[in-house]
Length: 78
Image (cartoon, rainbow, N blue to C red; front, side, top):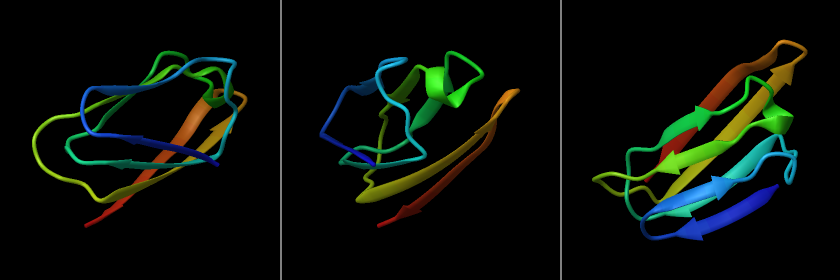
């Protein structure tokens, strides 16, 4: 598990530096866009961009296969 906290800007996960199936991210501003630069979870560059409202907690579960990212699930609670 990887934990990241921030109040604004972007959280960036470099490729090949992290291999994970679950990430917990805490931040204060909402609207999170997840853009995998590669179609493979273990080599993905994931950029989280922040926008307007407030999250308290976000849980993201990822499942990958030979063809790459097959599932991205996000549950957000206040």
